[in-house]
Length: 36
Image 1 (cartoon, one colour):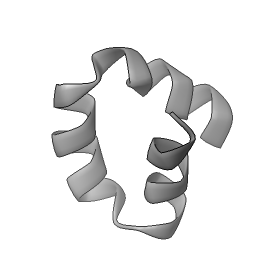
Image 2 (image 1 turned 135 degrees about the vertical axis):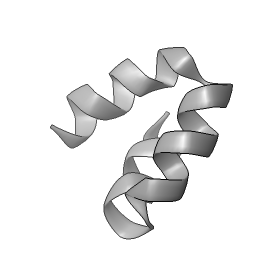
Image 3 (image 1 turned 120 degrees about the vertical axis):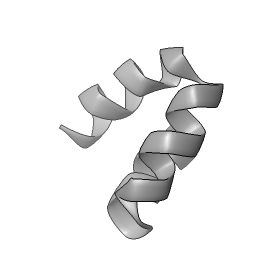
Image 4 (image 1 turned 60 degrees about the vertical axis):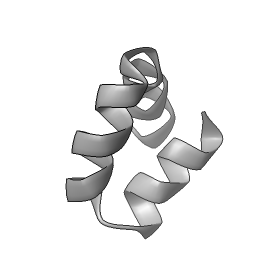
């Protein structure tokens, strides 16, 4: 979960949004709350 948030801030949100969100739809809410 934390990895997703970090990836969104450090890496490219573009690839994260597509790849990660598709694999972990639940993690989507987690990263949104953690990353604000």
